[in-house]
Image (cartoon, rainbow, N blue to C red; front, side, top):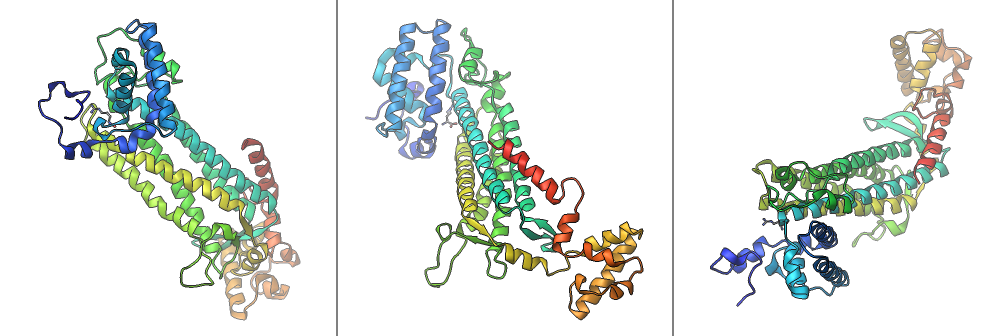
Length: 459
Ligand code: ARG
């Protein structure tokens, strides 16, 4: 004969084994144990303050819960599928341990507000963790930017050579992206940091309780205003999954680029052997598998966002068991992005940039053509006209196979009388970089300021 379920009062038959294993969540929600216990300790304190349990009972509960916490964290606790989830596993263990007092812990509480609380506590911590990992990656990018401040690379649009930029400027573009990701997470945190405890099953309770107190004890900014919303809201999971998806997308863009950059044809970077893997058949191979996997794992994260939205879209108020599935999605999305962030930070630190290759690449593709057009503008030629003139000059250079700077002054004059011998001060990669002026451009002065800014900001 099996043990009776905590909710078994109205049942005349035992749960089928198949139902037990189909409905369980202990296999994946056990990782909520810390938050579940933290919530229960706060709840017990509130119950004692409200005289719903005695001080002695509260002390026994808190002591018992702390022992269970220790058992779980040292791997000694035996989880039972039969008890469905982390909430009932802990509560049953508590009752087994301390007896009658343990049976009072669930006063003025339901698993519905309990699981909503655990998820908020878990997400709150993981939002912070993600912010920390983004910060660490930003720091590595800034470090590289500082180290290679003078390196110039071809900037691309349409993945064609466009205009030269400082490598540092390129790296800082990602730092900006990750800063927005952090801001998005902080914003998500604000909405998430409300306590659902007190909502009970869905309607609240007839008992005199103090949800504000539990909220305060748990460091929330306030209490959810509507009990039905409190137990059925998983917006914070969706928002977090969206934040993670955006990060994954940013990571994937960087990885895509660096996969190209370590290709033999390009060779802008060399990743340390420790961060590459080999081929089982081709002995010469050194592959950027880490970058590929980060790019690949992106799909998983987007998938979780979609599954969360789909999971919620048809749910009537308030709690529905469907919600149990949200954990699978959020946990894996967070794990995936967090491991990606941390390994990418390591990889960045272990990557060398090849300035010669970048400079060589800059020599191809007439990347000083825009500078020449702007030179003409400074000489009074309307931009559209200047664009046309430079287009013609480029065509000529392609024909005679030379760079813009290789043309003689007379050659330039044949296209525009506005061109004078100072034209050679704007041509060539270094001149281009030196001459950028606009705010936010790759002008070394601006980039240096930005580096200093990040250096101070990213502590
Ligand atoms: N394991 C459940 C979940 O994750 C806990 C809440 C169960 N509530 C209930 N009324 N059956 O959603």
